[in-house]
Image 1 (cartoon, one colour):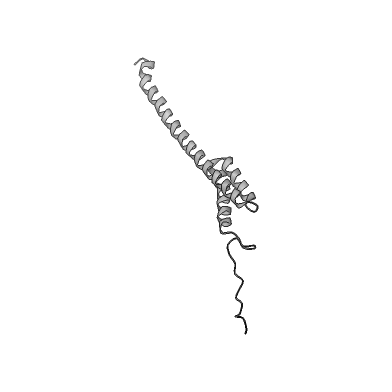
Image 2: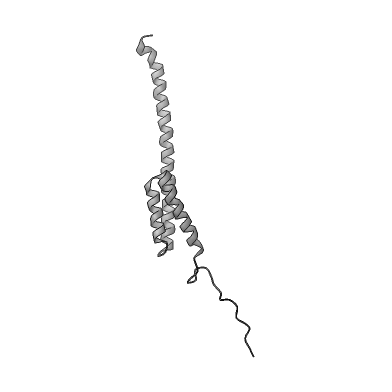
Length: 109
């Protein structure tokens, strides 16, 4: 009695020698975080992206956590920048409006 022919060896995600499916998404997210962090959000998100990229090979869970913290800090910093720009224009408009109202009284017209 003979055994059926053996097929190719089975592989499963996370098997030794097989890349984890999450590893690629963590790597892509970390690289994007580094680039976008330096361009738009300051150095803090980029630092978290660099830490995620470095720790990805040893501890994937920690790398995911660093990515998440980096993206949250990016969006918080971007939101603060937008709020400061809006406040700058609102306060500038109020000051210019007040000067326009007070100018005739200052000039003596």
